[in-house]
Image (cartoon, rainbow, N blue to C red; front, side):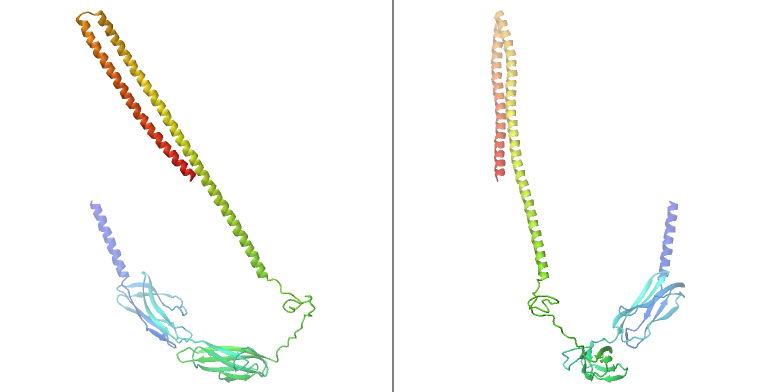
Length: 414
């Protein structure tokens, strides 16, 4: 008993020290100071501090998580915290916010990894300008019915743009094949004088939006290629040489549509499959119906056979009952014959006796004869009743069998 108490005290002491150690380890306070918003041109950084109630060494890390911005490498640091002393450090995520960074919500995170795990995080927002759609349009006419990127020398080239914002500020510089440049204001038109590749650099800006930069190239050629058209159709009513229904429809007939042939072939296969499936289904249904009819016929025959067997059983019981009745009646008759022989002996003694003894024997003989006749009559009545009762019961069973037989026949006919 004393040993158990010592073990309990030791266990409680151990639990207390573990609990105390856990509380000591969990007594580090983390604080993060960061602005709620950052815009284009600003530096993204934050200050963080540790305060501990005990002297201890910790491994920690600081990081920033932005879903649409570059992720910095994780760096695990180590330091020794002094009791109730402030430890302060700065974390720099991005030296400058550029226009190509999308607006998004981010989190500043500081986490202690060892000797225990705990963390602190604060949210902030990056606000930048959104882009807009800007596209260069090159055409052969002012209405731009024929867009193109290849033009013939000395023709007019019409330069225009399309944008989803109204009146953007546009600066365009065209570099010619001889490397000379010209500043343009869109929309405008130029004369295609130099043969070769032209490069158009455009900068489009709009207040509240990002500045968009677009580069477009187009070519100028000496003249359009003259591709002679040679007719192979001799219109002689015969489809020969290189003639076909496209270059000589008057000689060559339109070929049958391969796709329609393929469609007809597939349709034929599908119809064949459906017909085979229906035949298979009809065969299965026919087999099922045949089995059902056969089962019903066997049930009918089996049911009638069972009923006939039961009727035979009843007939046998009738015969056995009759035999039992006759047997029991014969046994009773034997008993009566024995008693009659006994009475006959008494009668013989009476004849030989004289006087008072003869009178006594006569009364006894008369009494026994009357008693024997009454018993014989009672036994006959009792056996008759018993036989009739069993006979009625067998008759009732026989009537029930006839009804069941009729029901089985009716069901089989249906």
